[in-house]
Image (tube, rainbow, N blue to C red; front, side, top):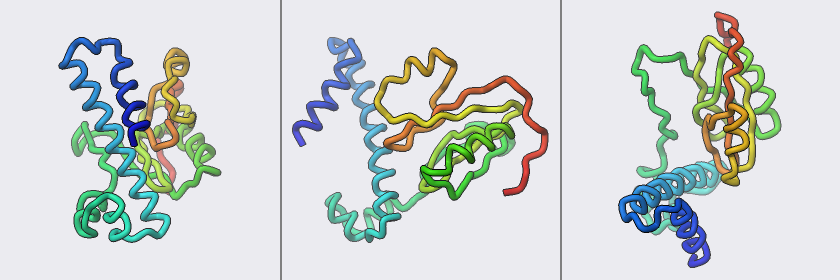
Length: 176
């Protein structure tokens, strides 16, 4: 565990503002949020792999009930625009083998990913077409950002990038 702690500590300190205690608090809170989401995804993967809440709780030092209460929810995507916000839906089921083809089709229809769950993507529809790219989560995204890509969502070990093409999308979405 100390090797993992050292790696996370180095990542937190890499922000270049190690002398500012509040900056360290902010970067540590960011690391906590990221590792919390990774834990959520790992628990969902363990459940999908057939592991019981009791087994998961045992690994985490929790009771079965506590593990289920903490991790038994869907990943929260929220709706920052309220009930009258953009049209949203889940795309799926998809696997690592077919999701990029499905995301390409959805992107041509104006949909882009904002979240990912087990075998599915949370999508938002806009008036323009979108491109999707899946890359391994290594932290080096600046070259993609310079090319106009933005992070649609992270689903360890992947980062799903999206880019608005600016081209108009068809006005009606097909039933799926």
